[in-house]
Image (cartoon, rainbow, N blue to C red; front, side, top):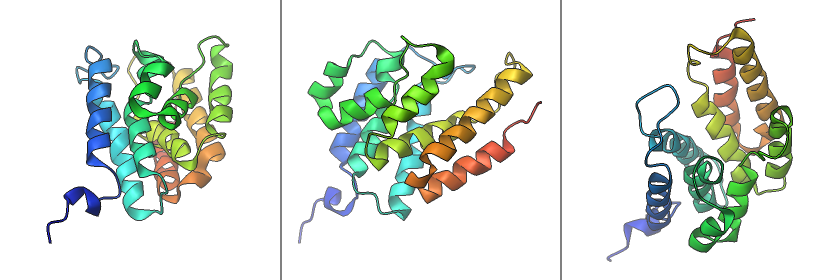
Length: 186
């Protein structure tokens, strides 16, 4: 019996590699803020969180979650538009990425609530990507951040957890722990 290895995985290796290549190209000259690491490192970390959740929870659309994890910053931080993603990955992935993209046309202080409200209209897998993204982002803050900015980032993470936490017990627990351990400066 000669069975394809992909039949034994909960996600498509081909779709994953296609999204990885697309994201690497879109972010090729970008670095993880405050480091010399290529930006794809952040995207890979978000994917690792999603892959772990897929392995221990009943995830209905693992390919959607992984593709959106890899592509979640392409509209916001690269020269990619919704139509590019829809053409390459389909409308469901493009809609997920768009929901995960902050609307730069509204005030910055309102952008997270706006994004969360759009994410909540998406499948559970998109909610999980936002949790995984914030888990990954809760690294030691850059030295240039003020105490106030650090505290606001922690409060924002708690808001994300409160609003989207029901999507994944594993990711919710991880984010809660990251919030606990995040520098409490004020």
